Length: 288
Image 1: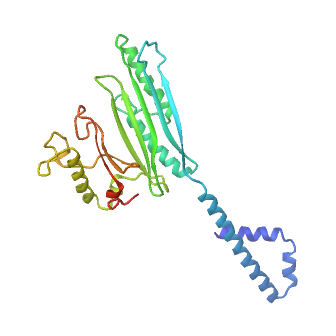
Image 2: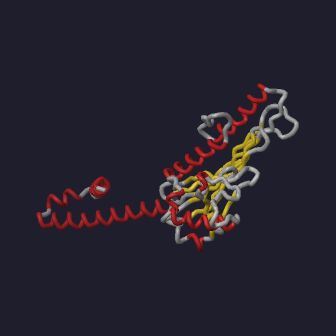
Image 3: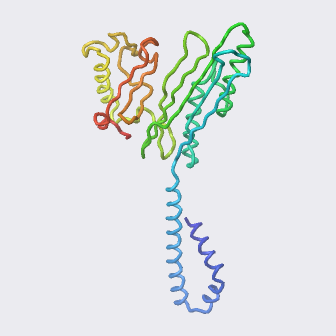
């Protein structure tokens, strides 16, 4: 602040060349009055400048732009040619916030798109899709007699946005051999002011109270007797205790609790979900 204030004083003197001459010919009283008036003017100019900068920064909003990255194998194939398509919302226009969100989304996709024991070392989406196809082509060259119909289809979307939370949904399907592929949804929650990740624990005023409420809703939908263990009808909650899912979504219809395949049930039983209307869940939410 002092730097800006001094700079404005310097500009004033430079563009008013007679200022020093006036001061030298004036008496002390005149000099004091003159400086006091100019000082008031400088404060006004500083206030206007600060307000202008604030208005400009407030006018910049975080926006998302979908980008698609895709690749097919260069090896000969007749049908089910291996391919990968990634469509993802890229945050922009608010550098620090956008950078934080984009890095987190990319990190999550590296956890989804990989083959082997470790994620790829790619640093961008082009490198990620290239690495996926390269893994297939290496496998095909090592086992030329086998047919591998690899594929990956990942689509991200901005599901929900408010002044306090941004929810990005990642729908993904990958197949790298075996009886079937794996598909699911990922929920990424962000603070729109900082771009930092919001954990599920931060969503609720009292997590234990909400869990009790959610368990009743889950038991009602999936017809689990209230006086029986949560796994009594075949579910696979750890330690036979109800838990919230890894992925929680903010939707137009309400708060979606989504359990992916294998999370609390077998692959054959599929994913499980419950949607709780905001009229019922708002009193539990710390972030809306």
